[in-house]
Every structure is written in structure tokens, then in C-alpha cells.
Image (tube, rainbow, N blue to C red; front, side, top):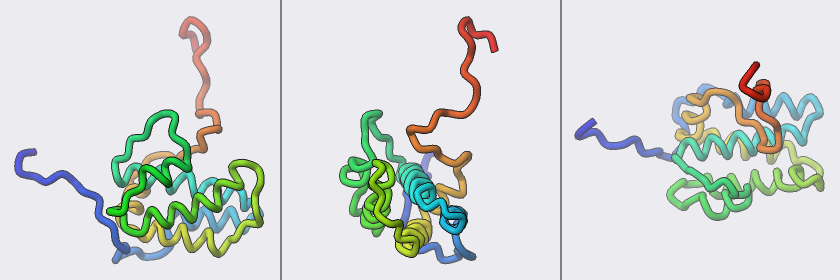
Amino acid sequence: MAGVAPSVPTYGVVADASGPSAVELRVRALLNSGRAAEAVTYAYVTAEADVRRAYGLTLPAEWTHREFVVRYLRPDMGPLPRLMERLHALYEPVRYGTPDPIRAEELLEVVRRIYAEASVRRAHDAAAPEPRPRSEPSAGRAAAPGGAP
């Protein structure tokens, strides 16, 4: 539309947040059920996808989670670069099979602060299905040879 400024993500605390985000609730439930590594993985993968959506980031196929934190997050994103770096520090040992004891309160605090950012919360609320870790196979059946179901 002519004369309409493109939507620009803004950062700042969500003024009308009526409680914990859906992500925080899911992370808390996973922690409470003893699935701490899954809670960390879900928190990181979901937050990364929501930050990418919120800021329109398109990443090369060969990117790594570390590169995302170091190269793709910018100072104009407010506190998100620092928060995502903290979340990545919790996630990386879980991802590579050398987890330190999960610091549940730190994880919940970081998730709470990430989803207090208006642009990230809106991106999550507007998103369709939950993101899966890249190592997880996609849902659905593969087509048989020749295109038959």
C-alpha cells in the first residue's frame, strides 16, 4: 500500500501481558515433569524461531545456533541479544550431550524476559505449529516412489 510505513518490530516490555507466555508455561510443565533437557531444547528452538520471525531474519542453510547468537542478533533488538546468548549458554551443553545441571530458575527467568518483549510475543502468538529441533524428522509420511501415497 502506498503511503503506509512497513511494519517495523519494536522492542519493549509487553504492557498488557496478562500472565506468563505459552512458552513459559510449556517450559515450566516440562521442568515439573522432570524433562529438563527437553525444556531447555524447547525454550531455545522456540525462542530462536520467534526472534527470527519477529525481525524477519533469513539465515543461510549452513548457519549454526552459535552463529545466530553471535552474527544475526543486533543492538537495535534491545535486550534480546543478551537474553538469547544466556539461553544459548543453557542450550549448547544439552544439544551436545554434556549438560550441566539445569538451572531451572535461570531458564524460566530468561524465557520470561524474552517473551516480555512485544515483538517476540506477537511473533509467537501469530505463529502456526511449534518449531521442531532441526535434528527431528518432519511430520507426515514420505511419498512412495512414483508419487503413489
